[in-house]
Length: 524
Image (cartoon, rainbow, N blue to C red; front, side):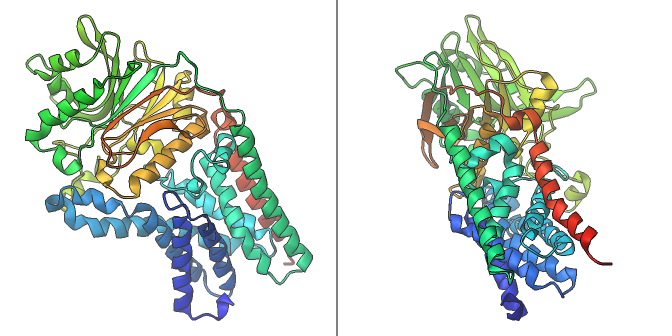
């Protein structure tokens, strides 16, 4: 049927299929949109006699629709300082969505080139597109935003599979399940079509059964768990960097940190880049902000503060870092007990790839620093005095499956929790912060570790090791206040935490086997 459509109608259907798959993601949650993958598969099958470039264009259009839904919020970041960056906004959206769609175009070509006839081609489709998504998450700096496997709301039964196979493995499974209905319309024997439908239904039921079983054994929070307060000061990004607002912003954070509670927090968290200043200046002996911080916290309390900091080398070279700084209140004052510098920086947001060329073209990063940020060393957990060992993930770093696992391998220390400080104020009241919450929560499922999430404008939350927001431990978009909650317990290391993407590699092998079998049997 699709092969009989006007070519432009087919292209519109390709775009619509990608849009549908994109809308299946939170916060939209239109799960029938997963059938968009079946439509993509059907369109690629229908154009077999046509050249591979036709497959590429259909795959690219589907990707364009998918990523337009996924990243449209990027426009908001360029409108924060519209005078300087507003002109870049439409180009940023088109280039970002269109650039990411190239991966889907390449996956479509790979599928069309390799796919054998029969229902097993669904596995080849899943392998081609999941492999392309893995490349998207790793090439250059990587940008694994809204992997298809993260379509399921974090904390739901299907999302629990990430504890075993990771987000990339779940991407393979999701693509296979979403595309499977396409084979129900094959011309094959009815028994084969029934078998294909039964296998897909059984796989979906197994996904839910595994998740429900895992959630039924949830570990309760210990009575003596550390009490954590997350401060959400509702500081609009457009107002944050006005010099005259520094004192008011500081006072807002301090006032919220001191808000009375039944159980005083041992740990207080401020989000990424909480204050519009370099922390070295704020804590300098000549500054009155340091004494004010000392007065704001009780003895033994620790402030985990997202901050910008500067280092000046012996040769006078100045480097700026996007950091998390641990400040412990002691009798003598504040003591720095830990520092983590962001390792994965956002291209164009925090640094410019090919910086000299970009500068000549009039492009600069969005940071409010004299220079771009410098990447910190490869991450390891931080263990500030009096605080359970923690793996910081600053903003963008929460997108990457295996980030914490790599830090554990590097250090030999498994943290008790993950801390994601982020400045989602860049994305305003859009879907971006809600998507970011869902993606970050997958890191909890993969590692079996709770996550505490702090942002200036939402969404801030305390999330258990199953990816679920704890009861009454969430502040939504545009809300001012604090989240007070005990730290949820860590679970035993998950299968994913132990073996990483090995299950995903085995799933890719399962995609390759039908291709090999067909090519061996095919008459020359």
